[in-house]
Image (cartoon, rainbow, N blue to C red):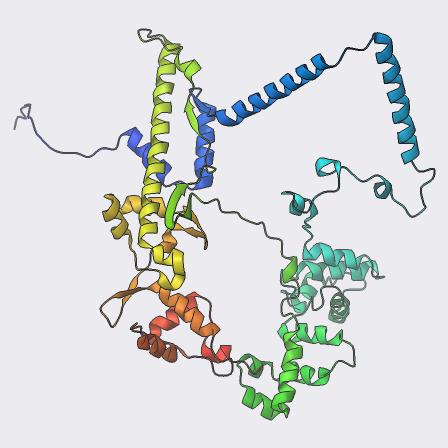
Length: 508
């Protein structure tokens, strides 16, 4: 069989993404921090791009400087110029007076308990003491001391042998961030025991050193479980503390009943009356179940909003945050060096860089326009939330906004991911305004966000002795015209980290 070559002409449609479109889509889905990094990389790699300076501030500064120079010129003209001898005499007198004033301000002798900084304060903002309102006051006065550092410092103050200090160091390394001993003593003993030693470590030694560590600050550190942690804190209270023996009894034997809020069984077994149990619970609640929680080192993460919403003359206005990215433009100096008919390597490189700079600026403008358009439609749809709060949130899905701005849902998803809106009610991610809906008895729809807000409000106002069950909350919502199943209430409640009714029950 012989294959015969031939030419055929076919027509078809094919969708291709140009490099400009790919760049625009990539910039659209970047967060604020990623966008700032992307712009900086473009400024570093493309000589045709430059940051736009604020012409108004520089102009005002120039006017101010010119005005000062004019005032100085007028003053110099108004006063007669003194002679050279008069100038030298006045400078000498001024120098002598300055020396006398400086000598008078120096004390003849410093007190024994006085530090140099007490007499001559270190210069802070404006040459004075650091201001608490200054931006870097917290960073200069913050402490990054960890729990291990605090315990090790206290260990060095205790008169222990080198052997016991080594055991204590191993114990401190086994204490977690909440202050509990996360490694059983048996495992610590196995790691320290060496049969070849003349005097191997015994388990009793480890327990004795643990008791020493449990006397360190914060109170309750080094406990192996919750009852031991609370009992350590009780032991350090004065002996005359009211209801101290009863609190030890409840924690030692009936802590599980207390955790289950089974107050009837707890009163029967502990033989305490209701008023007495209330006083005991008040004492127990004053203890800290996580003694080292306040020593956890965590870096604060700040969110920079992309859009700002504010009410002006009774109408909500949406604006882009001008601080999220620097304003860039094409460098006119380099652009003027390009010659139209020149095909040299340098000229071609500059042409390519100019084209890429124009594409990048156009992609940024497209990103800002799309973000502003989507945020404006969200604000129009969720005006009730801005005016009245979460309970007035309306159901909203990506398709609604995509249809309003005539874009694809995938584009809306990119725009609303990791983009934040600053409102009078706080800073929210754009995706926060999207939620599913539940039908109402009147034929309308209610947002799941609004239902969560209602559940939270009902739980906050409930009777602590008789908390609302999920079925009762569903009945209350049904009376308001919102048809929600009990399992849906339970799902929303768990999503908000609200415990069930039996765990929310309080005696006091």
